[in-house]
Length: 448
Image (cartoon, rainbow, N blue to C red; front, side):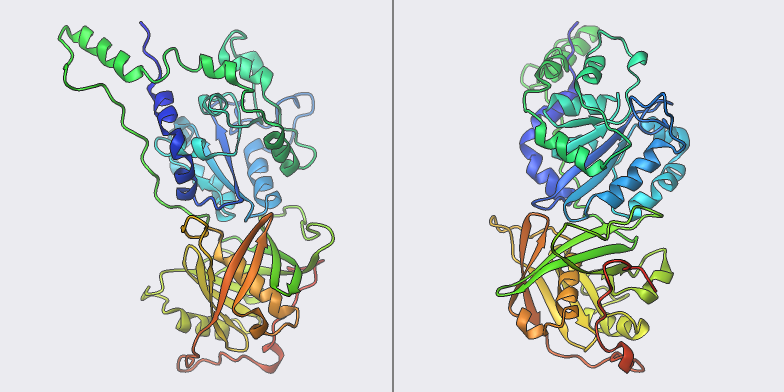
């Protein structure tokens, strides 16, 4: 009896929603969504310790922590978005608390862990590349034309005649040596839409027909007639809640290509996870300075006292910390070596206060379709910090500055707000030695 695949049919029906799913997952224009997918086994991406093809030279570290750490440190935050789709048995076998512990560093660096039951299909549709193993999720990705990079694939454990085994013989493999970013970019650049056409034909016996076939089977088993006036339908995939990336790990920011006519700053941001590789060299030819940005809710509270920029995400009317004018004044007083603070109160805007006391609203221009720019507003705050650190006055950045992240230009309105008095008992102006913005050298942006 042919039954089709209702999961695959729901994916096929939702393909036109790709752009909406991307926005819901916080993927900004110009960003690429990388989905890390793992099944549940000792030789999966989650459970293994070696990459595919490296069995003769086993690694000493577990594969997934290494991979997630490399993703966080190698991929610029504003050019890539990463999510993890793990098999339900991983969550239930080890327990949600243990899995969150394993993913903790990567999540603080911006990784989003998708629910094991809902939301993974939407992430798959929205993906630009799936980094996976022999899971059905990776196979579904290939079947809908998403570029696939295999990190673990125990070919010997699979039926050589199965479609999944065919994927293992077709898709490129991830290598531990060399640049992870280069490998991901190469897979996306060289991908041909019809590469996995044969696999797509084997994904389902009757694509788009599973609801009809399954209902017919169920009613036949019950020996009753199907309702003639109600078609057999599957629930559509819902639009996920808006989930922008949140980074509470320190962020290393490289800035350069600063120009005044018109005002322009290029920004590259990398989350700092553990002892990740030093990426302070940045793209050749334009990096001028580096600085550190720290979220006020970071676990690494010691970083706050040496941060160049401190940020906070909250609604403007949040009574716990707001309004922005009060918070920015308080935080500058609390951290006298900080050069600028940013209160992010929307997906495309923030209010910053400089060490000299200027209160400034930074607002990104909407996309051509009128929707808000989803680039992290902390990038705009870093651009303004770099502008001031370079010795340029604030009024030369008015009324608009272009912030470039990767190949994407973000026009940002710079609006000087009326001054507000500091809260009672504060000394927002700081000491004479800290009343200027400091520009950290590129070689050691984390030096204290």
